[in-house]
Image (cartoon, rainbow, N blue to C red; front, top):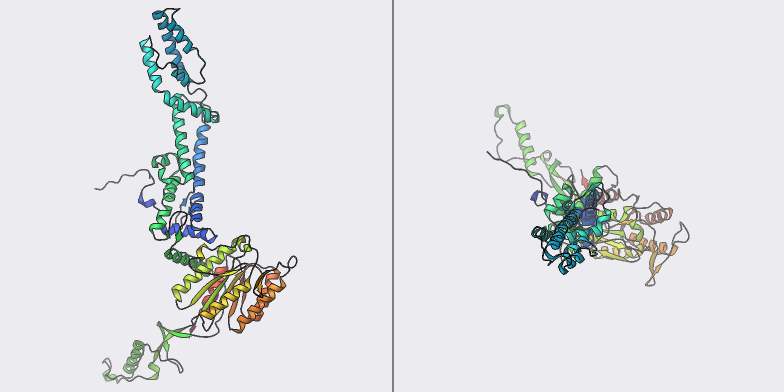
Length: 547
């Protein structure tokens, strides 16, 4: 018969080890906000995080320190340490009284030895430890007093530690329970332990923290959290999600793929909620057979026959038309097929596309969760295309005052341009046009995510910025130069679909003019709905089924 023994968890058991995928998921949430890898790791350690799919929150250093502070407050509010050393002071006074009596008897009232003794006894000492130290080396006439003094002398180091503690913290104790000497010493040791725990947490030195101390002073959730925080970086590195030294860590390609897959899953979660965004495609591309679905062949269909279904149709037709006397016998070969027997596979018509996502990275995108939502969509589209449509070409171009291409390694760590209020959509369109020219396809498209009208542009090779004219106004030259680029892209057959994250009149007016020129589509959406709109739009343009 097996017997199982259960004990309190001490933070070291493997069932409470950190799952690397859950850790990366928590890290990716902060990366979406624009933090670097090391900054995000430090934020997780300080603020804690939820574990996806588990009813458990990893407490951060700030919460753990509050738990320790609460423990300290409870002790401060319970005890009074003002008489903590009185027991030792009474013991010293009692043995010195006996020793004075013995000195009088042995050396006499007028003796030099008694005088030296009395001078020591009645000297002015700032604390009890100094009074005890004063009699070190004294030749005790009373043997019992000498034995008791040696016991006090052995306690001198602990007494000095307590006196130091009382000078620093004694006044903070305001409880009603008087603490004797040993209780005060225990309190001193407890506060020293609390200080070591707090210092280790603040400095991130989790390895130095004692499991026993964690169990004693933290809640069970807090003790588990320390173990998980201690293994956070190692778990990510061991799983192949991080590389590099502390302070210069980087995401690996494996981590980037998972972040993209998670972003895509979040987008599809919104799709299942029924949010709109699809539209009809304008043409069909290459037909790919779907062997799981078939239909009778019709005139004009490609002869993509489903061989098994076609032969079975012929066999069944011949069996049904056989003479009654031969029923049940297999028809003789060869089998003559008729047009009605032919059955073809259903086909999906796909086309290779080149898609450029134009991502507004101006400072205003930091508001209301706009940029994290846009970055999630960019990662989701990248993962969708790489996994489902590997022949497609997909690029991300970020723009604020200047535009630049963002590769997949840069994308998870990309952030809005702090303090940069200008929006150079014109350069973003120019860069997208160059990418499409380098990777041509029959149906190139741009997906523009923005929350503002153009306020920067190039003219004569010079970068120019232009504040809007008045409240609610426009930047006329920036708008004109940008629309000129829109016309050029339209002539090249490039469709622009715009997703607006703001409904200000100046932005709506600009997008309406751009859409009128390009004949693309424009959506007003919110950060929470952006993934549904944009992904549905990409998928609906990417594939159509032919029935």
